[in-house]
Amino acid sequence: MDNFNIILTGVGGQGIITLVSILDEACFVQGYDVKSSELHGLSQRGGSVIIHIRFGKKVNSPLISRGKADLIIGLELVEALRDIDFSGPKTALLVNDYSMGFQGYPEKQEILVALNKAVRGGMHLVPAAEICKKELDKDVVAGVYLLGYAVKNNLIPLKKESFLKSLETVIPQKYLDLNIKALNLAFKS
Image 1 (cartoon, one colour):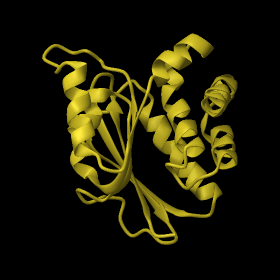
Image 2 (image 1 turned 180 degrees about the vertical axis):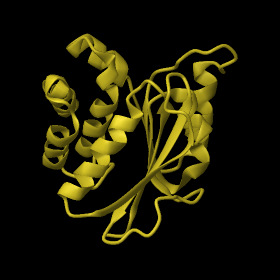
Image 3 (image 1 turned 90 degrees about the vertical axis):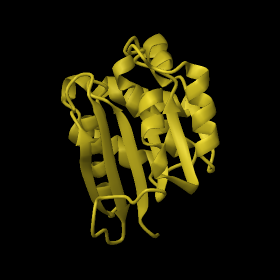
């Protein structure tokens, strides 16, 4: 496999730093070389965060060139739009249908039109936060749900079992069951 490039984007407080640890560990479980980097932003609550993740047989740099992402995972609509220039001809876009709704944000329909216009590899708009809140009473695991969705829909060349092992390594014991439920929930949808 050539290197696989993921842009993970969101807002501090959504668990994005935990998600990159889960992704990195799942790659290690499958024997891939993996590099990741928080490129800009503050991973504190409310700050814009973008993370580059590259994995494959041999990865020399964690940074992804503009137009070279294979998958963009947006935990928030505006953040996905903010980093859409990493999208190329085959890029898939997986976005949580959720907006922080800060003052000055564009209308949802405006964001969706811009995202659809920019991405050519297919857009998956998933109400992950809403589903997790309804089914698990916690929307904070929406990112883990999105990882499960990515695996189920072949958007990422990793296995569910790798993510389950990764969760056991990365997630503290008291939150492990909730995260496993979130991952499994994506496979039931």
